[in-house]
Amino acid sequence: EPEVTQTPSHQVTQMGQEVILRCVPISNHLYFYWYRQILGQKVEFLVSFYNNEISEKSEIFDDQFSVERPDGSNFTLKIRSTKLEDSAMYFCASSEAAGTYNEQFFGPGTRLTVL
Amino acid sequence: KQEVTQIPAALSVPEGENLVLNCSFTDSAIYNLQWFRQDPGKGLTSLLLIQSSQREQTSGRLNASLDKSSGRSTLYIAASQPGDSATYLCAPRGSQGNLIFGKGTKLSVKP
Image (cartoon, rainbow over all chains, first blue to last red; front, side):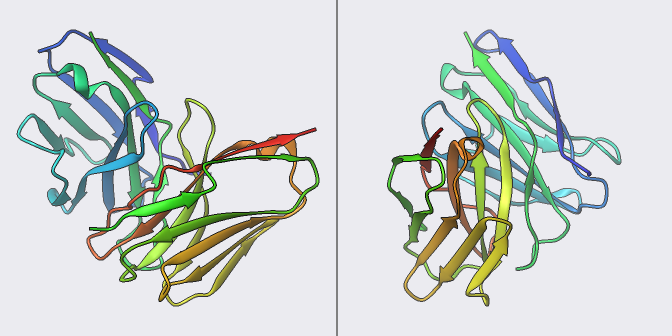
């Protein structure tokens, strides 16, 4: 069964460093998403991406964040200068389309720890 | 702004019980609603998607209902098993495409 994959599973970085989190969405999907979950808190939407551009973004997704689809299979989230409060589990998701019938499928997540 | 509340926050039941998890949301203008399960330290597994025009959706021992006008959804789990132990998350989807999550109900099914 097709699934969303994410690498790495765990990333440890120093405050102020840049990190890139990688995702491979399900192959025939067209809509891509990033969410995050700070330990013990709700899953929060960051950004959605379609047709090589951002569709929607939340207040969390400030200038420190960027997304890219560098090739036909990968979808990346870059954090330019990490802060302690960026420590969270980051989930990538994809869906075939954005209509009412379309389910979002999530990857296993990348645990980001900022020291 | 959509707010999602899930009650109860935690639930412990003996194996074999039927149980109901509740979800309420403040903005009834949703496109659909997904229920997920999350195992500790893991990703989200989609259980059911119920469209805004549907009242119910079933998958195996799971049944989700949706009352859009009153802003409520329930997840019914029949004949619970220890393997059902996990956190269950409700997430309505609005017109912008993103899911808004509740805090979840942590379910523990005792053998």
